[in-house]
Image (cartoon, rainbow, N blue to C red; front, side, top):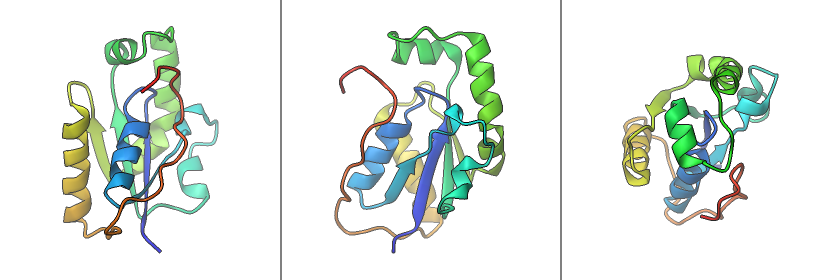
Length: 136
């Protein structure tokens, strides 16, 4: 069994995209919708991960990436509170503001490789995308 990599973070920070790209490279990556949970440690309750990657962005970047959603500072603060436990325990924190999809992927891959995290030599099946209503 491959080690599980969980990706948690602020809405629109790139969780689904990073999961998709890691899976294409053979990593068992899965997104955790921790930002929607009232359970602070939900990310570790079912099948704790070998590594937890946390993605962060600010309000301006949320609005830019998801103009179809009315984001506000209050909701961002709620998400940050719900994600505090995951952020505190993350093995890698990536601020994806200003990072391209490829740059975020390369940072995650560099980290996973430095940690000796094994992966398949073929792409893993894609998972359903979470969040977002804009076609990708």
